[in-house]
Length: 250
Length: 273
Ligand SMILES: Nc1ncnc2c1ncn2[C@@H]1O[C@H](COP(=O)(O)OP(=O)(O)OP(=O)(O)O)[C@@H](O)[C@H]1O
Ligand SMILES: [Mg+2]
Image 1 (tube, each protein chain N blue to C red):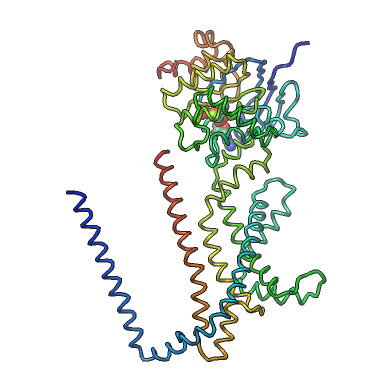
Image 2: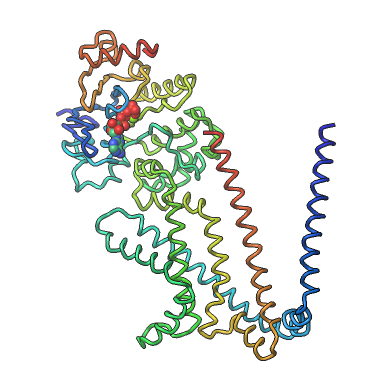
């Protein structure tokens, strides 16, 4: 028997009041695999990631982590979230904590890692992300790109089973996008399992094994980036990609 | 060239403000000392000998005020935070506690402090229940704690509400429990924001400690009052007022300083964003 996928999403639906935001999402992310979620603004990418992270209640369906149903009401969310890493659309660093305290907060408080060990590991990760010497700085004193790298390091510090990236480059100047893209590609190469919501097609092309196109809460097309970008099948995918092409972003 | 002109301008501004202060204060003093009742006021309110006589007793009473203030303030900081945290819970199971906390705040803030002091100070002993304190100082302290916790809880709550929800989401996403997120992420940021308003409440409390005198303890105001009544002068009351100012004015300056600082910090953040 082969191991179950790290993450599996089965028929997940979610509505905010009257608005149906997710309409039966099915998705599986195998170990060491990276999947990119693309789609127009408001198509439900962030909502899907938040549902998988149990930051939102879902209306129907299941989410499984390593074969275990985590959306069951009897499962305590903190225990699940400890095993997942999430980087948000806007940086979610804690402004009252230094960089190293940001990074060690979860390992120390949620995982019980001894402080010295957590700091040591934080320093290693910071060095890997080109942030050596910034451990004692406060987030406000870092550039946007540096802050976003710290956020990624924070999410990695707990050694998560899977990493969720939500538009990690959308708040950054274009010249900083390449830097983050490069780091994420490195992570993928080192075997990290990832689910990446993005407007940056470079992530889809260079990092993702599979690309899922979301339209109004449904995955209407999926496949490899080369195939989808060269010959999209669904009319909405065609329209979305044409708009990107016209904007010079493909 | 420029620097010299700037310096000159600054000098002129200082001279003008010094002169105008002198004129205004001098004028006020002149009105005061030439008023028909000045002699009487001076002998009853500002008599040096009376001051020397009563000052040690008033000071001793004031020391009691200070001790009471410190203890009450510590209790208020803790109780206020607990009430604020209860009010920010969301779980349905906490509804009765939430309701209780809301009622607590409304009553504590809605009833005049002096009334609370009377009600607790005379009402609790009248209950004649075993285990309840009967010491006037303790009862007065309880009344003040109750009243000020209501205000301080609302101050804390405004600070907690002002922390962006994404901070909670970020902390939860890392695997922290709600309690850990509050403890390590939300409350530290909230407290930083509300230090100036909290200190303002401190100043008010420092003065309201005098209300406990209605229940009997020999604190500064009461000592001064007794002294004043037995000697037919008001100088001891002035002495008590001056003692209060010695504590409240430095506190007010600290608040100003912190407020200016937090304005500066926020200004910087806004420019950067
Ligand atoms: N808390 C909420 N309450 C109500 N509606 C919401 C809430 N959060 C999201 N929505 C709605 O859900 C829909 C999907 O939003 P979502 O943030 O998932 O889109 P997205 O694909 O991530 O968009 P973007 O590319 O702009 O980040 C949108 O129509 C949005 O308005
Ligand atoms: Mg989004």
